[in-house]
Length: 281
Image (spheres, rainbow, N blue to C red):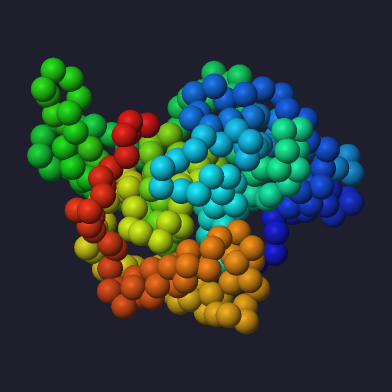
């Protein structure tokens, strides 16, 4: 596993250290989230970072996930992504905060009060006329838009998205919406909101089906092979996941990685579960 991201600092304080040990101050709340999502800042050794704080006490019960486990699943998603060698999930830790234990994640992108806060995924997702995507785009399926009209849902044929689609297959992400994609001006892409992940049953629900059935690129197969090695009993990653997930959920991660490597292709919708989340954003 790679070393934690570092903040430029004479003190050499890492992002993980600031997130987990810094003084956490809540500044506001993201009001359109289904669970309590608080915007704040953490400060340690003179370094200050913006962050998202999701207290366990603010998690709404779900019929198919154990109560009070979403924060751990968010951290597990970050750990797995890092083991794949990909910087697609912002640094994420478990810690105590003003409303009790919860997930604390580095804030990426514009601040909530910024004019372009709500923008993001429109360069990666679109609804278009016609039955076939333009070059550079992958078709997902048809969606009803208004008054019985349908449009073709497409996403960019983007290597970053393809890695994210693979990560979602590994962690069994049940809620990859457009609003969970955060492309940044410097070319980085992040995925957020990984609370409904790691279920033992197949619940993959995503907008990123454009590569379904296609062969996995070589670099993704290499990353999956690296992850498979890190999931061995004697590796730190598997022990860390054991602190965050159940034994059955940890074993299911191994099985999904093995299945992807054996198939050599991106998964397709199973038909046993709605394949696309709603609303799309």
